[in-house]
Image (spheres, rainbow over the protein chains, first blue to last red):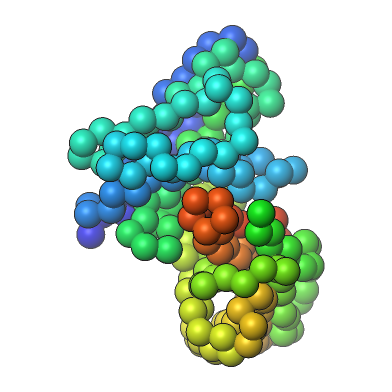
Length: 110
Length: 112
């Protein structure tokens, strides 16, 4: 059974640009959540999608957005990138209370 | 808002030593999970504890859920260098729409 797949693994962007990250969940999982991880803040919840609807949202500015497609694949978008957006972005799929994470996308903003 | 506090934040020990990591909250959780994360990778689920007082063992790792379901602990016996990593506890916060919240993590370094 394939795990959660995130693409790309690494990304370097310039301030002011926008970026789109992709996540393919485990087959049969309809819930996809996104997290931002930085050394100082730990794992911070961004949002959760279930059956193409945003079910939960964390305390991030509107520059962070996401969506989910009918096949449960999800994308998150960050517009007008700032240096502070540099982080490991993790996607997790779940069916129940347990989350299964992808390897993450390491975003560096220069 | 439910919060999970982990202690210690950092732990550096020699191979062969025992250690315990704690995860505490003032709120009751229906279940808690423990994850282990290696640098540059996503967290990997180790165990889920559901019943108050429950003890689960995974080789040299022992997980316990408090009787009141407000705290949990992870005990590692005879640590090995391969145990090095970030250990995270997590629980579902139904006051916040059922989202999974994480403790800040315990960074474990096991030296040879």
